[in-house]
Image (tube, rainbow, N blue to C red):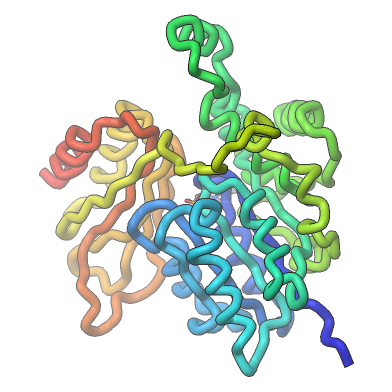
Length: 353
Ligand SMILES: Nc1nc2c(ncn2[C@@H]2O[C@H](COP(=O)(O)OP(=O)(O)OP(=O)(O)O)[C@@H](O)[C@H]2O)c(=O)[nH]1
C-alpha cells in the first residue's frame, strides 16, 4: 500500500514577528501528534532552537529538533535543507508532521520549490505556508517604503532596482503564504488591524485567509492540515527577485547582503533592569532590527532570555542553567548591513558599568 505523504508546514515571517512563539504554542497543544522541527535562523547563535528545547513540550523531543545554522535556508536549500530532509525520511520512526521555521530574512519560495526535488516529492508535501506578521511593526510603518527617499537614491544610482529590502522581503513572505497570522494583535487597536488587513489584501493577487492572534495562540488544527500542496503552486508566488530576472539568464543568487549580524559575549549582568533600559537606547540609536539571546544574572539559578524586536525588549527566565553549562551572556544582534558593529559592541559592553 502506498504511504500518504508526510505534510510539512513552512512558517515564515520577518525577524521577530513571533514564529518561534507560534511554534511553541503549537507544540504545547499538539494533542499527541509527533512533530519534527527544522529551524533556521540568521546569525551565529541558535537561540530559537534553544528556546523551544527550553519549553519542554512533549510533542517535540530533543532529537526531533534540527537546526540549520549554515546560513539562510533559502540560500542553502541544496546543501543543507535537502540532505536534512533526506536524513529525516530515513528514520525508522517518521514524524506525523514536519514544521519548518525559516529565518526572518528568508524568502520562502526556494524552500517550497525544494519539495519538488525527486527524493522528497514522493514522500512529503507542503501542507501550507504560514506567514506570521508583526502587526505592531506594520502599524508603525516599519515595512512601508519611503518612496520619496527611494526615488532620490535611484536618481543618484541608476542601477538601483530595489524597493527597500525590508518592504520587499515582507511582501515576498506574504506572496508565498497560504495563511497569514496577524500576530501581536494585543499591541494595536482594532482600527489598525483593519487597516493592515486592507493593505495586505491590496498587495496580494491571491487572497489567503488572515487571522488575528496574540502570542501565537492559534489552535494547531487551524495551522496544520491546510492540505494545499503549495509546491505545485509555486509558479504563482514569485518573489520580487524572481520577477525582476524573469526570462533573463540569471543565477538566482540571493545572499542577504543587505543584512548583517554579530554576536556579543559578556560576563554576568549585575543589574538586568538597567542593562535592558540601556539596551533600548542602543537599539534606537543604531536602528537595530533584532537582538536576542541569553543572560547570566549572578545568584540566579535560571538563565534570562532577552528578546528585542525594534524598540520593544522582553525578558523572562526560561530554564535553570545546566550542570557544566558555561554561564554567561550571549546576544545576537541583527541589522542592516551598514550598521556600526564596533560602536554597538562598545556601547553594549559599556552598559555593564
Ligand atoms: N506583545 C506581544 N509580543 C509577542 C507576541 N508574539 C511574540 N511576541 C514577542 O516577540 C518577540 C519575538 O518573538 P519570536 O517568537 O522569537 O519571533 P521570531 O519570529 O521567532 O523571531 P526570529 O526567529 O528572530 O525572526 C518575543 O519577545 C516574543 O515574546 C504577541 O502576540 N504580542
